[in-house]
Image 1 (cartoon, one colour):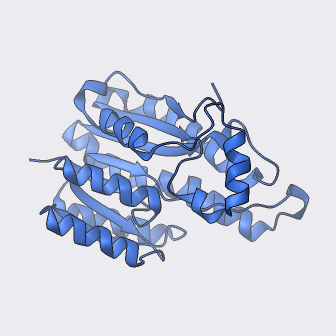
Image 2: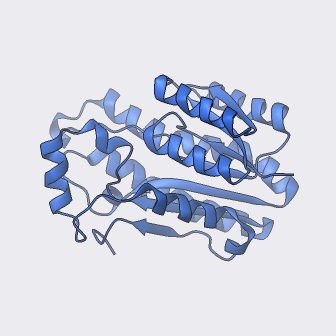
Length: 245
């Protein structure tokens, strides 16, 4: 039986790419989305159908605890297990700290930190029952090297890495690993929200002078999913082109 992956934020740029790669490797996919179910996501689903992938889609608002609980219940009902959780859903908001509105702060913390905790909390009973699990939290170089205006996002991602280490300790005896991947600036995802001039300025700050290739992220995820990575847990793996060591 193939492994079942719950991928949050599957309708985003990186989410779609991760989903395609996992489908090609034969994983069963539980794909979460919220508002961003656009043509690109429908194109992904068409691609998955063409390769006869086994997938399910679920809409959930990650600012709502009840919807997260219902999401996990639905995956359990439809598939019966969750082997891998990839917490990829995220939002960003830029504001200088003394101008930061509390509603915006709370939204960034809720989606980037509280929601992954709830997804993990609800998934762990299934993983512990099966004595196997792989949890991969998508973090950011901003947690380690923030820019002005990123206080909420940096705090949320730093918290996510702390959560990763804590839950790794709690689950180590259950053959469950919990790791984070701190991304630099990649060629898919949130980078597309920035104009070309700002993208070029960011590239100048990257030691190897280019955006990350999405295939590097995919290969890292595939390794963390398999049984050969069982001794790696509680770690933050940095994929950033040399921006932070």
